[in-house]
Length: 200
Image (cartoon, rainbow, N blue to C red; front, side):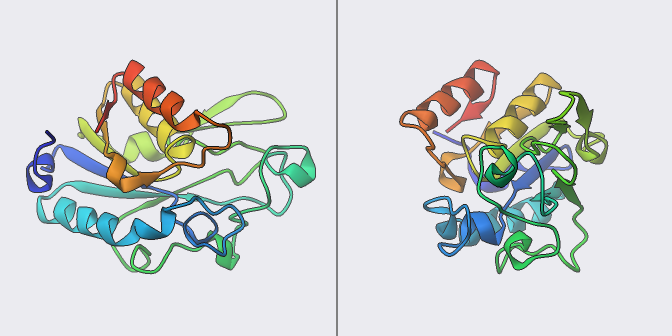
């Protein structure tokens, strides 16, 4: 049984809200994750609990150029989504950090995959580069990772965090899964747990 929300957060903990953007979380989005539209309200409550306990809150945001090898139109895997400066890249209502003190880590703005909040991989060269997320979490030891999608960006962020020695938790009630291929959800959960992530 998981501990109450209010007990999970303190000054040495952080909540990372992954890619709660129109193209993923809205049924009209170009890469809608089924169930993503049901997450805004409970994630907003989680953010409020973290803030009240003095924990850090950080948002990640997919932020792609119009053309990138990440997109199927340019040889990649995914439909065009979250193009920088477009409505599809905007945060969903109720979870827009504009005007709030929390930082936003934008990822995928070059020829990159942009899955993890901690790092991006150049799809042309294979080189991996760190984002600013680790620096924003200086002094933090415990992370809760929520958002979209559980089998891609949430998983990549959580696994990267565990590899950097954070104690990481992914609550299943606060994420949804693409399930591009049958079994992807179970495989993602197994991979996170194998990395030491608490998935509940």
